[in-house]
Length: 250
Length: 307
Figure 1 (tube, each protein chain N blue to C red):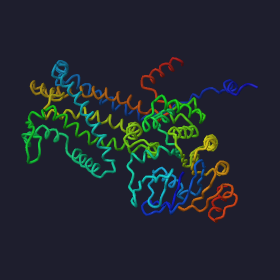
Figure 2 (cartoon, rainbow over the protein chains, first blue to last red; figure 1 turned 90 degrees about the horizontal axis):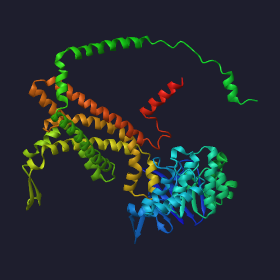
Figure 3 (cartoon, rainbow over the protein chains, first blue to last red; figure 1 turned 60 degrees about the horizontal axis):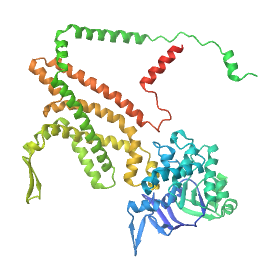
Figure 4 (cartoon, chains in turn cyan, red; figure 1 turned 45 degrees about the vertical axis):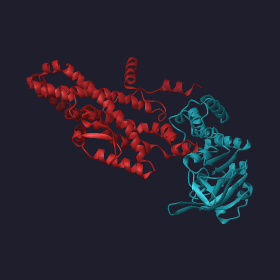
């Protein structure tokens, strides 16, 4: 589903991704862990072209992200085509990024109506079902400020799902939450994984990575240090850097 | 066992009745200000040069009322022009396209950098620069020709002068509003595959409004007063009309006071309007909207009854 080959990314002179090689199969749940500044969020943002890849190849569903290849040459994609690619990829942010001037249900129907041209009735119907699914069926008319952090993040997940994506990206979805609210968001994600959604999750929740993840990647300083089955990596890390990191967070 | 609240009310100690802190400074201030007000009132009532009855007779005469109306619609039209063009300019200024942002920068540089009075007169005098304006191929044939005297009548000069100048200021206000919206909003919208225009119109601008409205209210009040400069175009707005009566009757000063009272009345109405517009755009950023002054008054009255 996602294939990264030697992906590089620079911010000015700083090289934040130094050649990432990864592959995510359909229905796989991959968790990415690592210290802050290790480039894991940047890599995630490359997958839906919020950041452009500077070198290497990154493809989703066999299609190069943000570029079109004709012969030997790469052409930058116009915004319209980038938007089309993003329809297949849902994203959930650390800070929720709900639209504060819209109610929960308006947040969810916005993109299906505007970007996919769905009718209001159809979009609202699906939005209500999604809200039920994340356990917020009765909060559709609440504004984001009237919801707790955990509820906001669940609305954000419903909003991403409303575009019916094939792949979901989670960028530290529980890091901005009070500890007692983390569980409700992880439950929704676990349910999603069980239903067979392909997911890439940047997280600090080792328990979630162990239980739900099919694979675990440890990144540090812009490279993949170690990857494998979550149980192996967490219980028996091979590299010194992985060992020091895990000893601090476990 | 009784419930804690009941126990609390039963044993609650008497409310404290302490002697409040004295504020001698306030009494001094009251005395000074009362004296100044008394002096002013005395002058207003006894100095015949204020010509209150003359003002009263003239404040509602046809030409003055017509001037008031012109001031109002000029304000509305110029602000509408300023806001629409200002939004376009601010979006151009923030565009990654260097030609667009450069053009917007140049526009703002010119129109903000020259006095609005000069701009107004320039628009009115444009006829002396170009006698005729023709549409056609440069150095080639001409298709239409207008005489500028007919193309830009004084009313258009007034509107262009005020509106185009306002656009430069409004664009900076809108730009500040757009920049105040969290970048995460744009990212979320892009991730949801909304287009740049949709993101701007549906997500960014509505949120920018909260920052844009207060200074825009300021600009509107300022514009209402700036329309008085149109008297030099000349066009028949409030100040032009009151000055005309003043100089014709040799009662210049009383008519200046009349004009001031009219302007004050109109700006007061605008201030009330602004309060309610701000309240509307606070929706979603505060959990419960603050009460309006009317609601507050009613609350205070009912609470007073309870005591």
